[in-house]
Length: 176
Image (cartoon, rainbow, N blue to C red; front, side):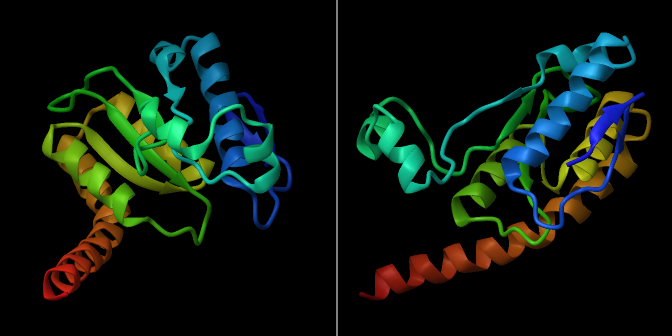
């Protein structure tokens, strides 16, 4: 991804960056915006390395097996990014960050729905640019109806398709 200068992402972004590169860009931007005082709340933005896919090399270097990760509290599908500062009717912001063209898993859709039901702004963002736009709208918090509409545009289409998959899988498991 590009560099962050004056709060803007510059450079020539790669065509198919990994989520970790998108997250690094997002957190570089957040650090800059926090340090300049524009959004001091971003000091508290954090990533939860919870259930990401680990390639064989990464898994081999880890001292934990998948079962040990699960026993230690790893929850598949939990959102990637947390910002625990309330705005309007929301307790905080949760972001599931995907690369452009990425797909939301059933577990991820379930977590997003759960957080939305608990009065969190919970969204799926495709790339650092989209996540930055959502965070800025959230922190400005000036038009909650518009923000809610934006949440629906970003997350509901994926959630509904995942919800259909969940219902279909539940029906299939009952039929067996």
